[in-house]
Length: 98
Image (cartoon, rainbow, N blue to C red; front, side, top):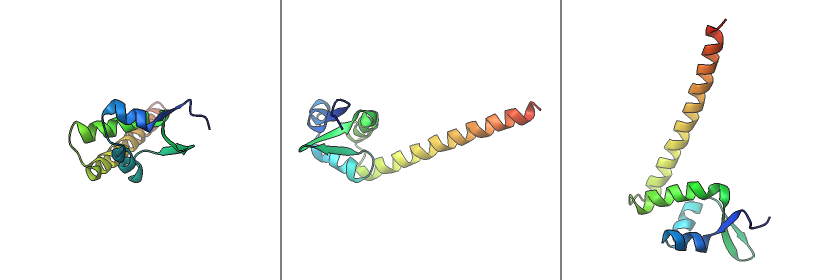
């Protein structure tokens, strides 16, 4: 796997002014995945938005890792519920049109 779609964690930490331990904690909590390639650690490009959201919660709002885990879990459940509501709305629209 090439590193062209990956962001080195050292550069990410430097640009967000955070310690690497924050990235490690997010990874240990299962909130983001980090990848080690040839002794360098990367965040995949598709997880960049998630990582930045979690960093903002931690740095800007002062929320600890347990709180971030809870918020992330609740946001995922809300997204699933919204998808279910959309599916049910579509089904209802189908049956109302009969």
